[in-house]
Length: 116
Image: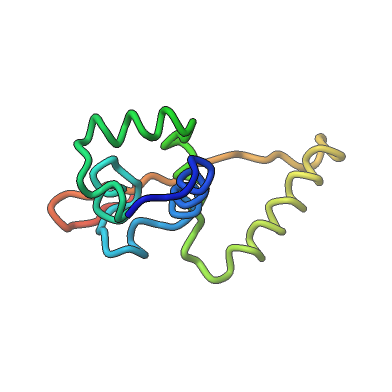
């Protein structure tokens, strides 16, 4: 498959990068070059260095691929709103409230999932 313009190619890849790889049958949480090559029809005949070169020429960064990441928790919007209230309370009333930021980390080992 050939695309008519570099802009169309870039738009297709950027649109794809906003999805989770899992939505395309790839059991990973982040995109890799070989995953893009597998999903994008016009990249399937390219080598991995070729895919990298195409992305570089289109000025597409794999860091853009993390923008789709969001919690699978259906109440994430409520939790985000509560975090905003807590942050505001700590900002405007620092003598009464303190906010602590903590990041969740998930490990995958041979199909076993551990949360830390």
